[in-house]
Length: 242
Ligand code: DUT
Ligand code: MG
Image (tube, rainbow, N blue to C red; front, side):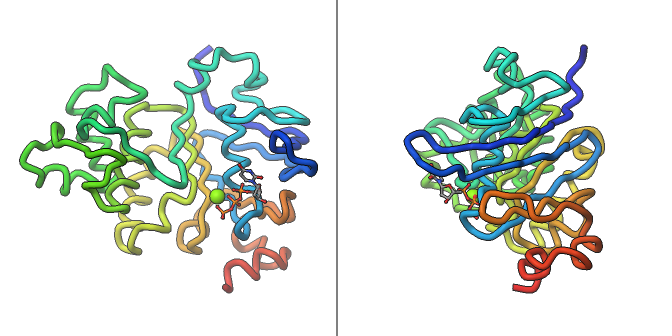
């Protein structure tokens, strides 16, 4: 059956290898295509850890993660990775060119597809301004581009995969407010058919989410829309007011 992108976490618990205590416990959530799920919580709450379980960067130590109804441990790892576009909290680039960085994950992408992804990621203008364009060199660690540019190239790289699931780990807070807003607008056609999970800090990023999951010390302390959580979740109120 074709990939749809329904992500489910069921009674998930996770303890880092060698650690004594779980950093995530009793996590239950369902994220569906055509909607955006936002994950909020203070630093150390477990947001990055939660996202890392979906492409199996780590395996759960309790409960299970399902993609389209199937335990992710049943997938061939490469097949799972193909279906998930992960934009890490700390974006990284390889030594090479803009194009080689973008094609990581989808070697067959056409130049046109690369430009389309760059456009959505708000990275088209600065790449077009480079004399070599898509063939512009990327120095070791992406040291010849700014942090915000690196972030947007990492977003474009994930979009080139055309995955049914996208995981954005705090990808927007490093961007200025205007770029952030343009980027989220440009992502709407994608979230209309894909499953999008974003870890976010700015209220503007999360107010429109179809569901918001509030994490505190590795546990879900609230699930709902912005208005529902404002009315019923003290932790959420604290987060959005800080
Ligand atoms: N942790 C480890 N080992 C790791 C990564 C994290 O023990 O390799 C711990 C640190 C923290 C908890 O797991 O107590 C959750 O960390 P995570 O990075 O998931 O938190 P976050 O919500 O993403 O924090 P931030 O907002 O700072 O990104
Ligand atoms: Mg994090």
